[in-house]
Image (cartoon, rainbow, N blue to C red; front, side):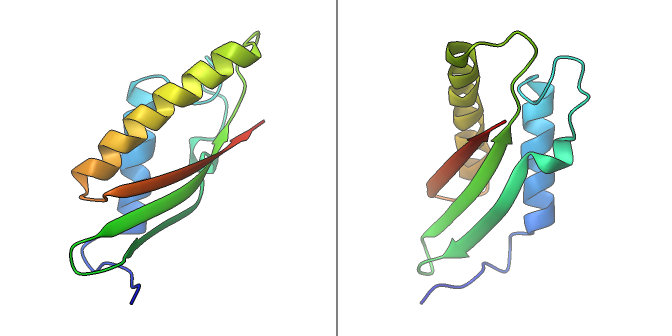
Amino acid sequence: MEFAPDNISIKDFQSDIIKTLSDKKLLGNDDHTSLESDFVENLQIWSLSSSKVVGTAKLVVRRRENENDSELVLRFNQIYQEMTLVFAKKKVELLSLEPKFV
């Protein structure tokens, strides 16, 4: 049966994601005018069993000024790699990310 894990705070999890990606300069515009709080939509974490935790999220990836499609996709790939690390630190084994390019 699926259930939300007691040991994971969605708010803290989202804050960790934003901090990690901000530190790596992977969010929004170069001048940081985009709202970082809008980056993660619909973050969900749940347990499939006592030992398997999974997560899903929609990520709003804002195109930077003069960023072409290839650069945007490359940045999303970097974001995905960093997100994988954040989720792994929280012991979330499976991750599904849906990009929303704007």
